[in-house]
Amino acid sequence: MSKIVPKFQRRSFLKSSLATAGAAVMAPTIIPSSALGRDGAVAPSERVVVGGIGIGGRGTYDLGCFMEQKDVQFVAVCDIKEARRVAVKKIIDDKNGNQDCAMIKDFRELLDNKGIDAVLIATGPNWHATAAMTAAKAGKDMYCEKPCTKNIAQSLILAETMRRTGRVFQAGTQRRNLPHFAFACELARSGKLGKLKKVFAHPAGMQAMMSGWLIPETEPNKDVVDWDMYLGPAAWRPFHSALLDGFNFEKGGGFVGALNVENGRKIMGGGVLEWGSHCVDLCQWAVGDCPPPVEYNAPKDGELVARYENGVELIFREKGWIPLGSCPVRFEGETGWVEAGDSGKLVLSSPELLAGRTVQEIGGYPATFHVRDFLDCVKTRGQTKGNADAACNAHIACHAANIALLLNRQVKYDLAKQEFINDEQANRLRSEALREPWRL
Image (cartoon, rainbow, N blue to C red; front, top):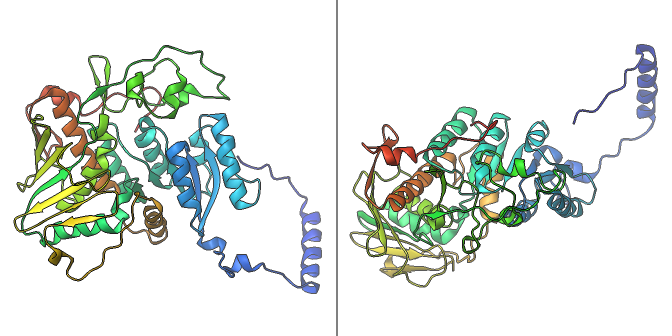
């Protein structure tokens, strides 16, 4: 908020200024070493000032990764839950050694703060795209958790907005900054596996799920939980506390508006859009960050096969993986293959593919390296590993595969027109209306 600056008489201002100047001549100026970047501190001019939007479970983890970096100064937290605002403020204040972290309920107020350089967006998926594009228009760089978009149309608008505004965007696809996944993708892109034929992604639940309404609960006071702001651009539904902290399909929960509306019902993305988007993103990287596939077939024998324009197949499959941890991917060429997972380990068709290199094993998919990549690009204005164009193409692949799952038939995608070919039913699922007053 703006501070009210008192008006001074010109004469009293001049007297005060001269007195201050005289005192300055007589007294030495003491500058703390931290202001000069000494003793391991980072000078204020080199710090990236960050605010957080929607800092729940995943957001709190991301916050910790940001605060590990010496050149980050976290100054504000925005959340629709009062208890979460208070809890996150304490984390930030304890780290900073002061009580200065601002608590904000409406993210637009945070974006109006000219002193903030970048934002961490870790809301529910119903907000990701809208918050990211609003942040870009406000001149902020952003680290945005995934899934970054709810549909194909949003994916395209997101990429165009970041190009037009020149903002630095990092999708929360942190595996792009882990050594073993990067090496596996390098083998595929560089031709070390021979001509690439197939890339495999694990969808973690190959089904299009529906999010039902839970039994309505009494809506709390807006200062405690702002339910209307929580819903944001998603269609209205009655309040239920279980929806505030993620989703549980067994109990009828779900991300609010995770994909589209068909016959008045919300279509949920299941594993393809949530966890599966990590694996698809790696497959996109292996193929060369090219446009998404142009053909998506109905699932058969536990696999959904998509095909890129160059003939490479993207195969979603649940089973048949080497036990290398969660988020497994596999890349097959004419002369070799590689498989990797969250254990940090690689399995290669031949040890010769290593060519004498030692690939660092980092298990557990930490986001620290991804956050560092983002901060470096904020300073250099470079392109992040999980930039908006890469995120757009990976998300379109996920959304299109999810539509093929829902319709249980083949769909074909026109890359030039960015729509499905002669398929009115599939094209209706490319976008959805946003609730007033939100716009992209």
